[in-house]
Length: 86
Image 1 (cartoon, rainbow, N blue to C red):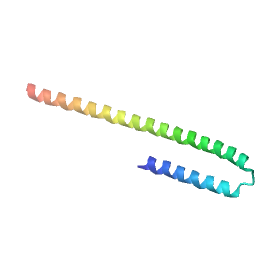
Image 2 (cartoon, one colour; image 1 turned 180 degrees about the horizontal axis):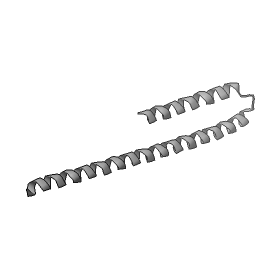
Image 3 (tube, rainbow, N blue to C red; image 1 turned 90 degrees about the horizontal axis):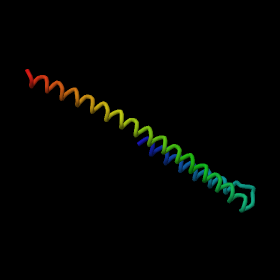
Image 4 (cartoon, helix red, strand yellow; image 1 turned 60 degrees about the vertical axis):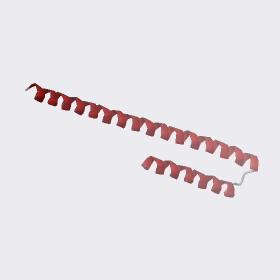
């Protein structure tokens, strides 16, 4: 849930920044448009990088939990197997 909140906050913050930039820009329309396009592309790259990092972190956590579960399952099976042999 925290990742969704952070991404949502980034998007809202960017939208507010873009709106403020448009209202306060002392540039011509063409220059403002170019600057907005560059800012939008940077924001897109930042969000994509963040999401990619978050996905990789979640993948690692998932794999660690699966490995731990597999290890515990194997130990449980071995314990049950030993009890059955007795």
